[in-house]
Image 1 (cartoon, rainbow, N blue to C red):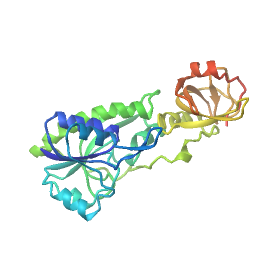
Image 2 (cartoon, rainbow, N blue to C red; image 1 turned 30 degrees about the vertical axis):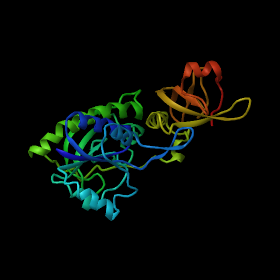
Image 3 (cartoon, rainbow, N blue to C red; image 1 turned 45 degrees about the horizontal axis):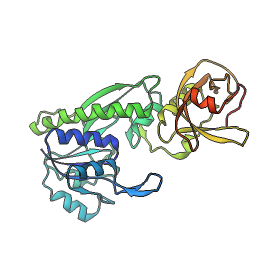
Image 4 (tube, rainbow, N blue to C red; image 1 turned 180 degrees about the vertical axis):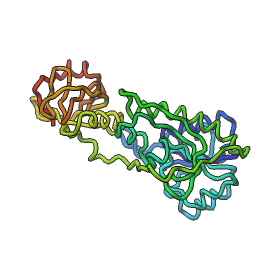
Length: 308
């Protein structure tokens, strides 16, 4: 089919690569404008933008798809379909209705659960045992369109948002590649979403990253894994030179008791409001991620230490 692809991060890049490999004609790629990245904070293209340029594809990076000029340019592409994967902008009706078959989104949850911006992180943070990836027809409502295809993924006890993201990106790209020919042939079955059970995956805010040790241990474990690798749940560790911020990147819940926030052994078992959390991978501010064993060799944390 003659398509346009709208996406920005690595999750979308996997899908774009699969579409190109499948031989579809990608008339244009849309991505968010270049943004400051890296140590020098220089403007750099998004992963999708960079890949598209490498493939010799036309790229547009509009600040807003609601701009009348952008809408006109999109309509002039004379598309069969538009594919949207983590683009980062709300699309107006004029854009959604321009392609002959419509616009389709690859979404990282089992709709109607976790509509919105951060479905993978919110699913792990909520302790969901299952999540999934779906192809849906886009409507003006936020992730409210009918579903055409779905794959389920299990969230394991040591999964993070990062590990789920990587599995989902690969599975979702293949799901999309299988669904596009069905859309073209008119054989794709569109199933309306259930009216009940809708939840919204709000964008992650920096203030959410601070660990509150008074919360139940299972909830803290979900939060740590749901915010890993980015932005990273963090706590304050007292040292001889004053408190330092440490990110917790991987953890496991354990059945142990003690005052909330107190380290219970010399291997980073920390008491919570109910139960305890074993910290398995951490990152001290200004340094790289380390497994707990390696971290403790350079920064011992004795039993009885109270974390902030």
